[in-house]
Amino acid sequence: MIVSLNGEYLDRTRATVSVSDRGFLFGDGVYEVTRARDGRLFEAARHLRRLARGLEALDIALPPGLDSATLLEISERLLHENGLEQGDATVYLQITRGAAEPRTHHFPPAGTPPTVFLSANRLIVPDDLHARGVTAITTPDLRWERCDLKTVQLLANVLAKQQAVAAGAFEAIFVRDGLAIEGASANLLAVIDGAIRTHPADHRILPGITREVVIELARELGLGVSEAPLPLRELSGARELFLTATTVDVMPVVQVDGRAVGDGRPGPVARDLHAGLRARLVRDTTRAPAL
Ligand code: PLP
Image (cartoon, rainbow, N blue to C red):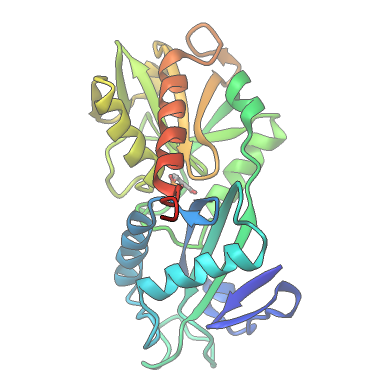
């Protein structure tokens, strides 16, 4: 597999990062995972905007000559070089504050180049899970107060997801102050009283790109959408529950902590939104035919 590290294209096995890298030492960096289909990125502008916002919040400057257009070019070249010009794939992008010695908590000297890594990977869309639905557990949200930033510091998410897997579940739903916030690696949406409810895009959730698109699709379908806190106790009255994320699209949750959601099967709202998302993905990544 060919990856891109600091502007160089090289085989993954030869791509190495310094042990002084602040991503390695502190989790001091941000990342993005962008969906691709047939060699083209889906909703690239939104991912790049979220990336830019994260870099600004962390006060990490892109190296000279590396702008959004270049990141897009690198992404598409990686899809091409890795034979991912057909079908579903993802592009992973990570930017850390770079490598500097000695190890200090405060920022390294100005001008320390950030580490910029990108890779492209085949995505197997889990259609069997979409058909069957998945199970989830709930777990306390131990994360910090800036969950809106997509940082590589994912320890609370890692531990929560492992807890879910150990319990035989697909996802862990973070609970804070009695509210169902989001999943360990996905946003959470519920259908309650015929309308969609999901935690507002504040500092407690990652503002998922899939969530954003799905909310637009829901409104196009004439469904009510309320971005309002979702008390855990209301989950038991939800007709449907689903996760949204770049790698799972719209994933129905049919059981939480061993209790069935609705009738225990994937529901029509999740199914329609999944179909709508897939149609948007195809529409927005299809190249115009050559004249
Ligand atoms: N929430 C969390 C905590 C995530 O890690 C992710 C994706 O990895 C999402 C939500 C979904 O975001 P997106 O739809 O942009 O993939």
